[in-house]
Image (tube, rainbow, N blue to C red; front, side, top):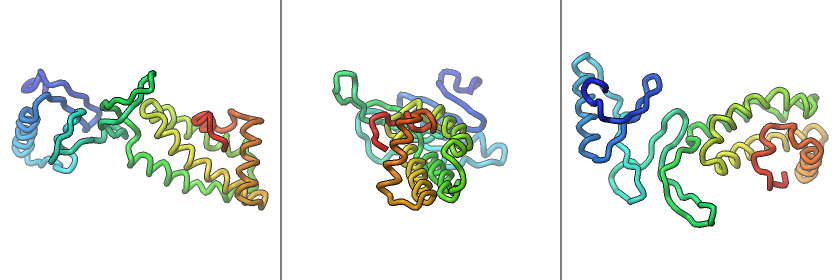
Length: 198
């Protein structure tokens, strides 16, 4: 890049790279150059991962409108400013694949089976991982990510409470709410949706 495309801004992490262009033609020319360069050394570009993406508030057809980089989906999103006015802007957010992986990881913990453990034991076991997700993915598109993580982990806690005390769904939710009021910082995810009742 520095030798042949020194004026193309880009970001790189390991073997992932994102290049920026103002014109579609320039992006196509770079992709063609990369394809030729790879062929010179007996390699091929992964066409599924090496794609040209159009990111702008103006609609455009027959082209990808989002891409994933380092666990974030980059695309145009509808936001709200401090006056409550809606506007559109390219913003990163936790990728759909990352959120699926988080949800599957939480399910594999099988929290509802840990009926002999106290809430404090569960918090000590999982809070570090929850904080890691929150610190990394919670920086952008916060509301969407926080709701997804809250729902995934809170539903497991409700199920754990039901199994531990052999009570109904409603009673389990109520007990968790009382615990949250008594110890609001016990679980790392509890501050994500401060207005929630569960």
